[in-house]
Image 1 (cartoon, rainbow, N blue to C red):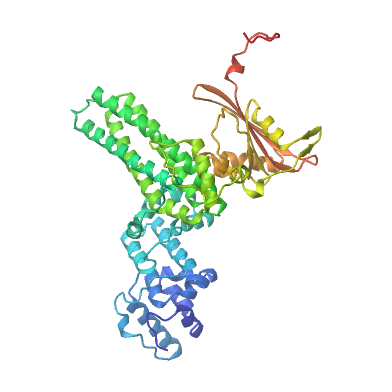
Image 2 (spheres, one colour):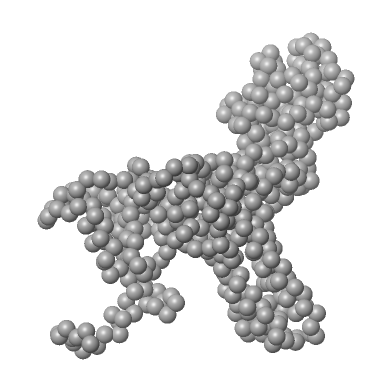
Length: 495
């Protein structure tokens, strides 16, 4: 049999089944060939040139070793093609599943400490160019297969470095003014100008005499920090608008990783504010520089990965829902244009709630009957915020009162409640839901002070008449005024 770089591994193993164990022992990288799932993807499609790329070895060396083993076992002389010398034959995979397996393998090796330069070469040999969804889908699958979200987040900047050359060659997604993506990118351009001003202020602070924090620089950095803090609107629009809709399309990787990074930026902004106010020069410089890096890296990830992916994934109705929601959240540093319009007009219910969660029938209750309109009004006027999730942890409803304590967006309807909380607090949500489902608890209660308010937060298990768990009710209330009440009030006094 003639063995050359374009020979299919699958064909070779069919002809010489004993080569499977030989290859598994030839290189640690080939042990995975024993996995039947991998053999149905990469193994089914890979040429020997690509197999050499997976093993980070020269094609000629691999072909020579295979030929020698065939001769040893069978006595048959298998001649490797001479042109296989060096790195020839390491062509890129085209099949989506095979490409994702290669990407996952690269990232696993990266997390295991393999040299980044070697992994870049493997990527250049076997993948070359990235589609808009490939990095997020790769990260999502790694999480689903057991890699902790914290570990993906820890090295996500390095992930980008591995694929940077391919990402740099991608054009920015094109939209017109008024499209939500156009607005987010305009916010990024404004954000870059703010970061340049911060960088200039930090440079001047670094040039000041040792241990001197000039008042004029403190005031300027305080002003820049106040402006920079508008980034919260930008991040909330991603968290409450883009992420839920991507999850509707079974894309959850970006929300799990990016939200955690958003929270890092939020925490570091708070720390930086404290350092500036306390005239702590060294800490102000260090944290300011760290923030510049974190925020610029996030801009890069948004525009090279997240935005192209959303443009490919979301449909016209999705973008109409994003547009509606962004008007609720507001805009950071920019005013959106008005050229873009959805392809058609969507009804209020179409934008507010996914089809599978819509209700259009009157409700017959145990002690009366209410129309959906009246139910909505009653819940809206409750003197507390409520949210409801079903037995599968999907968000069914939240009360849209005028002064909500915790921000909500229509895009969370249908979203897993675990994905509606910052990654750092998801374990608490999981513990509550687990106890409710097991029937060991019916109530979880917290109280905190936030923004000068004393907040009472309670979770209640919802059970039917048979005691079957049907979901969870969250109720949050500002009880600052209630705690301050004294004596009695028996008369109406509106004066």
